[in-house]
Image (cartoon, rainbow, N blue to C red):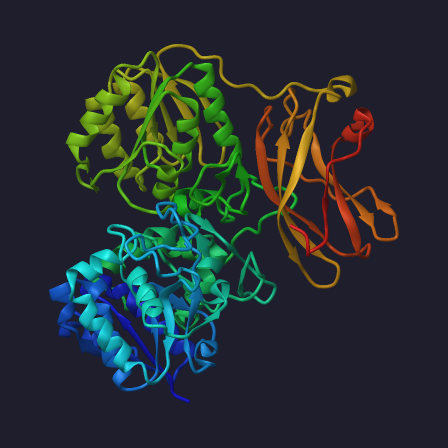
Length: 633
């Protein structure tokens, strides 16, 4: 059976849509694909990948969001079809979508739409319409016989009042409108798994919600089923987001496009001359990626180079640190983000220096950290990505400001930020962590020198790679190096007055260890072959003493397994945590069981100071434990 697929695009979105077509043809080589677009000039680009182009004039007249309904109506006249958004990469067969003779899509519970007061009645102007069958219209199957419905909706969508009544401007548009029309006209709707066939299995907000299975597939964290597609729903800058993905996830997406059929010579030959000249110096980096370091499962959040050659690794921020889902106080660690010990050093420095105002170049997880710590903060960001949205969602002040690699950030908002955030502060700090590239950051360094020379402290991340920027700032601002945290990428602190830099946690003898109290919560559980499993847990320091996880006096985290036959497997591999945990700190990370001791009842959590004592023994209380049953949350 040859299945018909349609999508819609514009000239400035064609790159993403070509990815959709390439991946779709790889999975369904006989698919009949029609791309509705605004320009006939796009036809050869899509024809090269086996797709037909249909120029849709309504795109220019009405905008893409309202024009979609005319594409649906045209497609419906020829019979049944599957619609896919252009920001999708297909990984596996989509046959389940047309397995039943009814309109089929995936559920969407509007979990990210806090602006809707009543999600059961999501159309305020039409309270009689129920949201019980709300779906994501980025993926749907329309059976034959729906021509009249779509033509009627085309008439409705031309009515500005009807359109405005059924959308939420700036938030929900065509998706909200189509869901309302399906309910209004009583169209029967069936559903396939949203985790396998839509965005819920891939990401939520800025967070990945998938992992690599043993067979190399992307699996949903929630249901452990393979993802049949990846949908970049809600991602403003897909290119930038892709650059931030872990290398193993990137590999799955590249294979979906047929990248494993392309050698280095073919890839370079396909580039235009200007691109090829820029790409050739990256060949050693690409070669090194083929021998990437594997994460050590017993060193969660470790500051570990992704590539075996540290020098090459540091040369690329996005490919420098292995990411393994570790979170320090809710903040993502690794990949393009800071490591757990870097977050801790930043926090402790800000407290020691009594800083009350921070201007940051580059929004993200550090923005949230600063928001928690100081009275005033502002992050200037040149790219709208999930890191920026996360910062805003957490209540932090973050502003999108146009950035040019030649001239830096636009001057007016930068001047306003330095005045509003820094000048009235008792102690102020600038944090430089964006944009990408030493030369681009050099532009920002000059802007700091020009507009924020009065600042008390400057902290530079990636200072190993960007040492010349550190030197330039120190010399121009008459500052000295107060401290340097020797992480793989480097964190350097500049200032004019001495600060008592953060020190390692003190050693705890057996008596002092009794003051330590902690709790553990299981957040995710992945059942594997046999009795083996992986669990994502959050560890919280509930006591008033620092848990020493680094240095010569470090404690190691360990699990004791309670077997179903009531045996206790006490001595298991130790976990080296990445940072000391102050009172109130949390660290979330993966732990695992290989299944060798048979089925378990629970896993008990403990700390050991090797050769001296176990925390549980000196504390004299039961260890915090979590269930190892896959049926419990």
